[in-house]
Structure formats: C-alpha cells, structure tokens
Length: 277
Image (cartoon, rainbow, N blue to C red; front, side):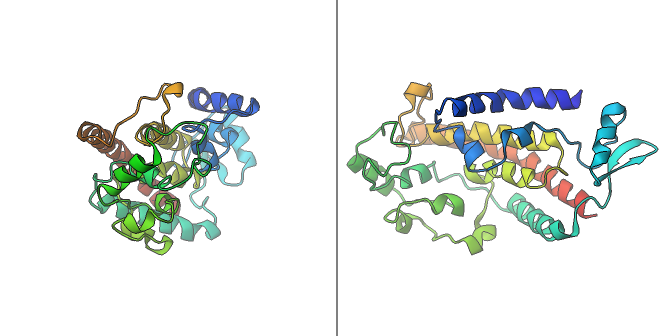
C-alpha cells in the first residue's frame, strides 16, 4: 500500500515532466528539478523502505534479490550494515554538513536576487530562459541589482552569477567554504535537501526523498516567481522583490520554507546515524 501511494504521489510530478519532454517542450520552472539534480523520474517513483521497517507478504520477498536486505523473524528488512564501506565517508560528511546547517542561524535578507545576478549585464542572446521576456529592460534590471549589496550564501547559485555580478556579493564564495556558509534561510540550500536525500538511495526511505522533492518543487516556484523573468504565460504571478511589499512577501515565504526544511534536515541526520551505526 505504501509503495502504491508513493508511486501515485510521485507520478503527479513525473508524468507531466515526461510528457513535456516527449513533446520537446522545456519548462523554465520544473525542468530544473530533473535536469540539475539528475535523479531520473523512474528512480523517484521507485519505493524503498529505508532502515527499521519490516516488510511482509509476497511483495516483500522481491527485496531479497538485493543483498542489502535479509529476512528476519519480523519480515524482510534492510541489513544493519547495508551501507557499503566505500559510501561511509560520504555519509559521515553529509551528516556533519546537514547538522551544521541545522545549528547555523538562518538569514532572510537576500530577497532572491541570485536569479537577477545570473542575467546581470547580459545581452538578450545570453539570457538563459530567453524564450520568456524579462520584466525590465537591461538598464533598469541592473539598477535593481546594484541598489543593495547581494547577500547570496550558496556557492552553487553564486557560481552562475555573471562575471560583473560576482564582485557585488558581500562574500566571495568558493566550493571549499560551502560548509561554512550554508544556512537554512537559503532557498537553494533547502531545495538541495532533495539532492542529499536521493544520494542515499536506495537506502533512504522513498517517502523522505519524495518529501524533499515536494519541498524543492514548491521552493522552485517561488525562486522563479521572484526572478526577473515574466512567466505570466505559465500562470506564475511575479513576486516583485524590487518593491518593499514584494520583499516582505518573499521573506514570508522564505521563512515558511525554512520551517518546513528543518524537520527534513533532522530526518536526514537521523538517517545518516542509522546507516552509520
């Protein structure tokens, strides 16, 4: 029943994506969840129980084809030592990374300007989603970016800033210092919980991966609504972060997403502890 419920839940996200892909259509909001994170729809649909859950019945025996599972008096369960030795250093690193982010104060002053910094001073041909118009001409867009210091804390957003935008950020981020800067107010840090969860598949509970995907999907909508792109053709109303009202709206959503992300981080830490025990 849980496997069927999981597949039905996930297909509501994967089926439209695959239908668009079959038609050769791109989607500036949702494609990111599949192309950037690289976890195939078929993998997302696949159900696996995670540690500590005993499975019964004929369907449970199919899991015994995987050496990570064994049969006990309670049913088919994931072996206590299911995490391969070669994956243990990664799980230890991930546990520390996620726990440190949990303990670090959240910041809510970036107002989604990372998407603006990615098109700052670009020509129309250089703009990534140039099949959709920008809400401002280049000079006005640049003035919005320059109106306040950029406060991005997420390297994997910062690295896509245009070259003229990078010096405008308060901190010059680097891959090596990611663990020192990651904080739970960041939209992309919270979207990345999906990445951290699916990298532990198939040992992670499928529901945890799906919960992280759902959060990432909801965040991605805000991410692009607050961007400089005009996505009215896709029925996405802009969050006008160029105005005080828009910035307040963005921060309200940002705080709500940080609250939703916290229990997912806690579940990821607990999962790493289980797999490493």
